[in-house]
Length: 487
Image (cartoon, rainbow, N blue to C red; front, top):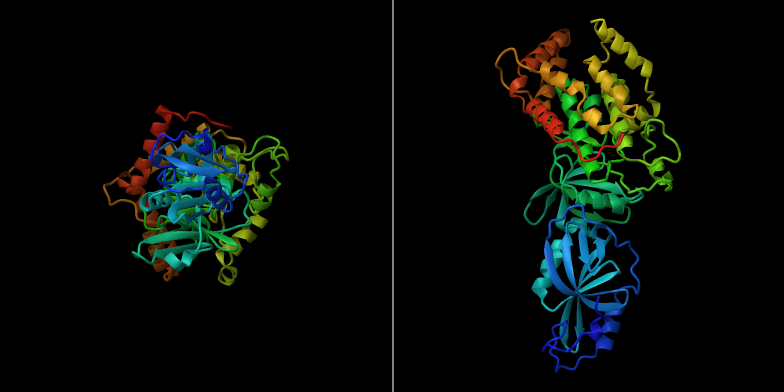
């Protein structure tokens, strides 16, 4: 790495665009620049890019740690490489400034108080700024965006004032731990179940994550509405989460906080489109203190099977939390209507999780009932098969990712969905909800109508994109298994 001062004078202009014959006091200029950043960088600069797409690559004059140098700068998604430093951009705010010296303008980009990039041309500075800022922390959200509607707790529809383009906004409390690592993971992930981040803004107490628009609600909200899912829908929901976990596992990452509030379902989608939010990620090493993590996810109350104080979260804890989620869906019972009217879904979820007890004997007893070809307890409308219950048991007892992905339940769900007659495809959840609301007004006919609808749905499965998507991925997984799996 070459110091700017020692560079040979072989060209007619210096790194700042000034002609050599111009009067240029380097020390004075350096002192001006040094007043804008610290003498020693404060952040870690060893963040290896997860995505290797090169967005920009150019030789630039930069300043950090009290030295001005000229280096090749390469911009990846969320990572700026300068020499052998890999700088995670999502841990910085970015600012544009001008520095005037000897009546000459120098255009600057500042990353926090650690790094300064110099440009002699405004257009080049603007181009780098526009590319970098998509990964940095921004301010003054309401200057550019207008909140439209709260869809559920901390999740809003939002519109950009300039062109009226619609997005979603997810509010995250600044007290949540490991946000720099979590933002880095989300910026550097490409998966259909992770909402693509457009910008991250901050105010005094919160971060606001602007993402692609998603019209959906948490799984728990659907349970509160007493929506009766079909077996193939529940299987598809769980399988899509498993595919996300496989993707994260391949990138040495995990979710960290899977629960019924953090899995969103699109009401309009025939293929049961989901989005997963609420990540709490940090690259823990064995022996690291995880008390902040446990404090933040203690609402789950269930961390992972055989939890011990010296264990760290990972894919194994995600799989366990997924087992808890499937248990909740399977054995969920209606909440008192008066209580539901008086409380918002988030408070009801907190109460539900506080009181939740996983009854392993209930799982075994229900398996025995199904094995004897008897009907399960009618209050458990999402008990479908013994293979479903077997998957719950496995997820709650250190099941491997590969075993979960190839579990027999997913095959059985597809087989049950095969049509007996040619009918139209699977209704959306919105249609199911509308049918339910209509039937609620006819109490004497509601039970008959629900079973009739259920039967028609199972007859129409072959045209359902859910099943073909589900089974295609099962087959793809068997042909080309994941690179690594952790139990």
